[in-house]
Image (tube, rainbow, N blue to C red; front, side, top):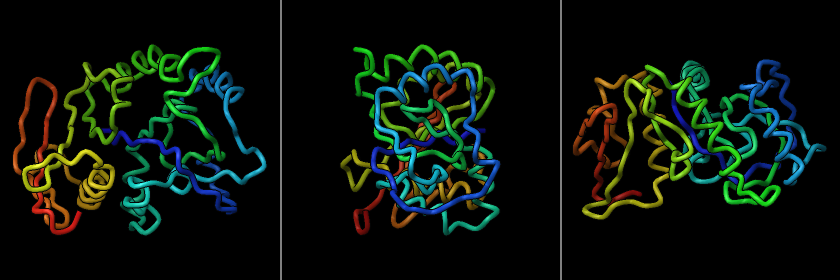
Length: 221
């Protein structure tokens, strides 16, 4: 099982030092040639202390996840199953230590968009590592860079406030991830998910995709 998590252009500049040796190495060495190329095309603050992904990234998803306040057992659960999709690194774990950097999927590197450099590599790698796995997809449009055809099941979420679809739903996805991880839910228990006044309205399954629609009355977010 994997939780697919987004990266963030908004990043923390905290000057903290983390000594977790397990977090030092970035996974998937086969991505290294692209990473080295991209480092030449973007700003990477090598003078700053490295921070784990969960502390480096900010913005609606990461601020709402509040990984640092979760119980250790829940942190370990998310760490074990997390895959963060990054325009600089490809895939990361939530515990990997990374520098401060600025790079978008739409940025240009050697006259090609970053997403175009990554797409063929990520498609191939995702087919391999997703094979027969359950994938909880908390990404946005960047999920198009991946291939979900080999998954056992891919779980995706939509949110409605009353009868209007929520477009800026990063916070909602973070709350769902917290709920799933805190209770260690599997795909047979998706109907139990709720946060604030949002509850599961429908669960539709088609081939290897499960679409969970959640609806709230708009009293909170």
